[in-house]
Length: 227
Image 1 (cartoon, rainbow, N blue to C red):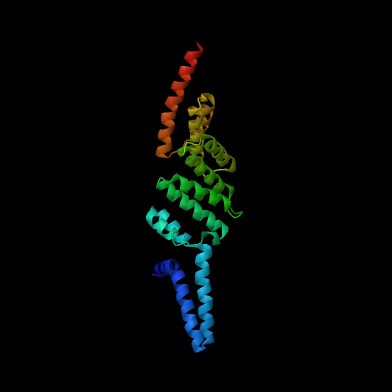
Image 2 (cartoon, rainbow, N blue to C red; image 1 turned 135 degrees about the vertical axis):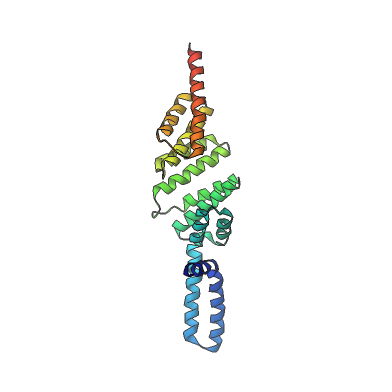
């Protein structure tokens, strides 16, 4: 019951804040200054906490429950994202980018991710920055911007990534770019590094399997051409 009440408070605190301001206006006419100042202080706390922190706890909970529609609904209650504290703002734009990616809106996804990087804070580790560059690299590949994709993927690895799955994903994307450019030896180098990480995500495992066949076939073809 307490958690449910707390959740409702987070959802409606902006509205509660404005109601308290209106009530403070009424109390000013009645000259009930004690309750006037109480309402003013509570209104400032309610409105300020929404403007500076947003509903990010609710958003994270929705994402954990894989309810992206609800997460997007909560994110849309942030009317002035520039007022969010930097670490919160960075997370806000990153989530907006993820949702845009899910909706295949790559232009918006790229714009949001760039805003996330602009909002980077010393309170957030370099690994978070690495994840941002990884996503920018993937978005650039979707938009067929190969040079930009390569640059961002390398930056992702340089900044550091949170887990071996993400590292493998970045390495495989770089290998794919080199395959497209017919740089098979360089592609094999990235591929072998990704394979050594032994990622367990089904999608990445399938990608490794397919790329292994392609690189082996391309290597055989090159060997035949040399002979």
